[in-house]
Amino acid sequence: MGQHLTAIYDTRVAEGLLRPDPKQRAVLARMEPLRERLEAPKKASVFPRFRTPPRTGAMGMYLWGGVGRGKSMLMDLFYAHVAIPQKCRVHFHAFMQEVHAALHEVRKTGVDDAIRPVAIVASRDMRLLCFDEMQITDITDAMIVGRLFEKLFEAGVTVITTSNRPPGDLYKDGLNRQLFLPFIALLEEKLEINELAAMTDYRQDRLAGEQTCFTPADAAARRAIDMIWQDLTHGKQEELCLKVKGRTLRLPRYWSGMARTGFWDLCGQPLGPADYLALIGAIKLLVLEDVPKLDRSKFNEAKRFVTLIDTLYEGHVRLILSTEAEPEHLYPEAAGCFEFARTASRLREMQGADWGRAGR
Image 1 (cartoon, rainbow, N blue to C red):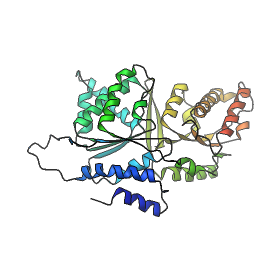
Image 2: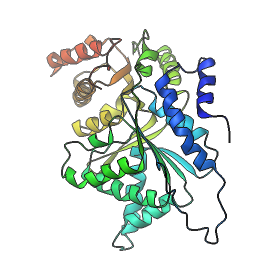
Image 3: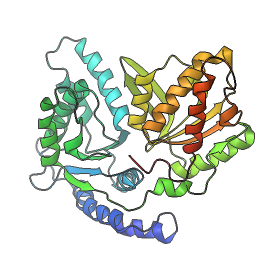
């Protein structure tokens, strides 16, 4: 057994890597029994293939709370210090993409219940699964994830998941939500529900006083954004894949609710409101680089840019960007330039120090 999780947390605070927060520390204290159970030596069995789920105690933890409260940081600290090899940490959207791909392959075999073999594979030789940012927006996903978690719990897999919402608010107002209610009851039965009600939004605090709009979009701007991105992500990133109406929106640079991408990746492709809505459902901060000066030849790109900014604005998503020109001069003429004035105004407002605090 290694150092207690709270002691590791205290050391990081002493080193200036974290700010002290008693509510974060309390969550780690609640995680310690889960870690002890996972690291406890297993008794030899005549039938080693069959694992017996623990009869007492929670099967994991559901950690929820507002933006920037440190949920993912706590889960990552727990994951890093559980000394077992049979563990996996994945973003929930990425996990669901893998599940859909596996279901597609299994259905080719003509089985009646495709979820069962997929769940068996997912839980095989797996003792700990950590999911970041659980969010259910589709009835198909709602039904799949309910069956899948049921099988994971039956196999004795410990589950840690983070979310911005309490279990009772998952898939809220969704189509046929009554079919999803048994899964909510399962989560509340099997997982310890903890709200991380920290008073500080650490992501916002790291940006306090920082420049968040860089003009022109040159090498100096890229270096400055590199430094901000490194500070926000601590050098970690992964690919995020969002399923939108049968297609996949890929964000190669993602970490803990933050994404970094270029203008042409989001506005130079045939994307629309549904794609941008899926995006704000998965992130709270977007780094958008290399926004060019727009003219008549880029009318479609300009239109998508307006839609993107409107969606980010309504979703209270924090925005860091680099632009070829100041917002007011990005689209000086051509059809829609008058309406673009509202976009420029919103871009200015979104650079405010308090932007993103309200409504998220």
